[in-house]
Length: 171
Image 1 (cartoon, rainbow, N blue to C red):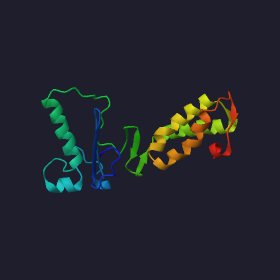
Image 2: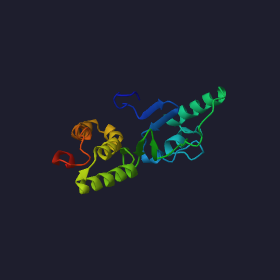
Image 3: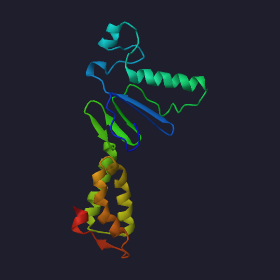
Image 4: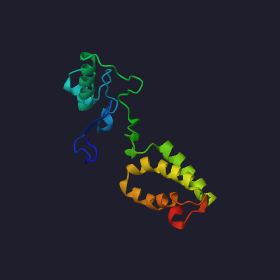
């Protein structure tokens, strides 16, 4: 995966950001329990190799060998493998439902914050600016939503200590 690049066309998605190496593979339900720990899916059992044939497993095993070979430290506390649901790079992935986007729990928190702000009807520029800052990351998952922030940022520059939220911001 490349920043601002399109979605990969293949079934294996791989990317690195600073020290986070992420590999995900789109698999059939039968293959979801296939791990290097010996639990193999029917297609891997039929191949008779005794090891998973899936490309994501091979990529990560090669990566681990590289770390060992060059004696590089690993952040094992952040590591995970063979997960159908995970959060990486600030994005939640749920393999069973197909959801990929901002973490659901965080989206709920931001939603509650915005509901409280709208209920107040009056806010300060400082509070509105901080609330808008909470929207940037979730909106990065759907770039056209970023255009909704223009009216909010215009209000943030307002010098009044408190002001009423206009309908364009409330909507």
